[in-house]
Amino acid sequence: MKFDPNPNAVLSLWWLGQSGYLVHHAGNWLCFDPYLSDSLTRKYANTAKPHVRIKPIVVAPHELDFVDVATSTHNHTDHLDAETLNAMKPKRLIIPEANRAFVAERLGCDPAWPTGLHIGETKTEAGFTFTAVPAAHETLSPSTIGYVVKAGGFTIYHSGDTLLYDSQAELLKGFNADIAILPINGKVGNMDHRDAARLAKAIGAELTIPCHYDMFEFNTADPEDFRTAATEQGISHQVLQLGARFDLFG
Image (cartoon, rainbow, N blue to C red; front, side, top):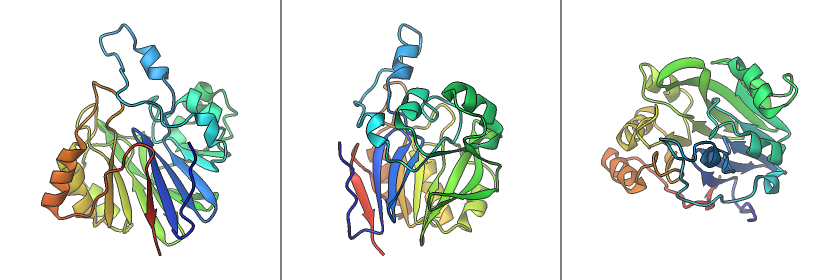
């Protein structure tokens, strides 16, 4: 699969499945939380929680060897997959600082290689400026975060896996997100479609894109429910097809 950015767009974004998004801006490439393997399907085969895929892998990870910087919001394999990241070979990897030793062990990489962020910390890699914000994947923890990313004049909030928590909306409002990427599966420590729509409205996101569905049979959601909730909240939203591109213009 080829990823050709729109030459007239300031920013282009593709959904890779689950919470994975590929972003192009000003010649630089960012990949949020890619999971592009069947490692979990194999791991949980013949168990009480089989990870049966609903949709195929959209692109082989080695075909994304042009990615400048990738992220991992936390240590669950669909957000930190050794098969995906070691084949992709991003030039840099952004992680929660609290996860450095775990990431190095899983990926077999030099512990000094990833760029770690503490909550509230900001660093720039490959033209993208990352700020780590709290995420409550069941509970708040320094090992589970979201990222607010500035790319030129645009701001993307990728929540990672999270429930709603006190002070979340107040914290995020100050970032003036152009795009909020939020989970809608409503289980395994994530908000559902209603909470995603409520949060998007509360933080004033210009556009909300749902994620964390259509990957595994046991842990999915209907994006039409999110469309309905978003319409009820009066927020702008976009539901992407797997592998589809969305463009922002200046």
